[in-house]
Image 1: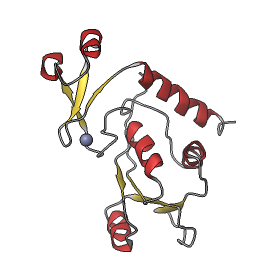
Image 2 (image 1 turned 135 degrees about the vertical axis):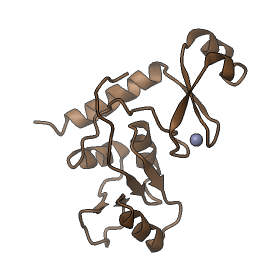
Image 3 (image 1 turned 30 degrees about the vertical axis):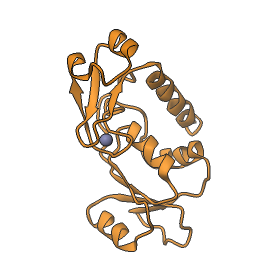
Image 4 (image 1 turned 30 degrees about the horizontal axis):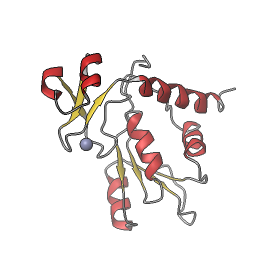
Length: 159
Ligand SMILES: [Zn+2]
């Protein structure tokens, strides 16, 4: 795990063209809503509640609460955001469901027996579960790879 204190405080709303970015921001621990259909009303409500709106719509007038994402690839999108916000994987990374954005809660190994592959149950000591959709997460080698990948993306914007 990437060990760094302080959790992300910024909250986002991603538009319908930024599904992959939304997933990555959730992995990093950011409260990130995803808008499946374009909705000015939803964007307004998100901004009123203090969310930062991320959109591909280039006609959107930029403001402190809206960022027009100009890149196609998610790595470049993360890099663009990383110039504005601290996206370093911190203590909050992997604390949120990538599917539905709900916070994860710790689950005991006994509670997930039969719900994860046997070899995972046998080799992992800690699990987390999304109480909204029921998806179960554990710290595998892929979480290390994700941390490394995000770090390598963000390193390219640091002098
Ligand atoms: Zn979920």
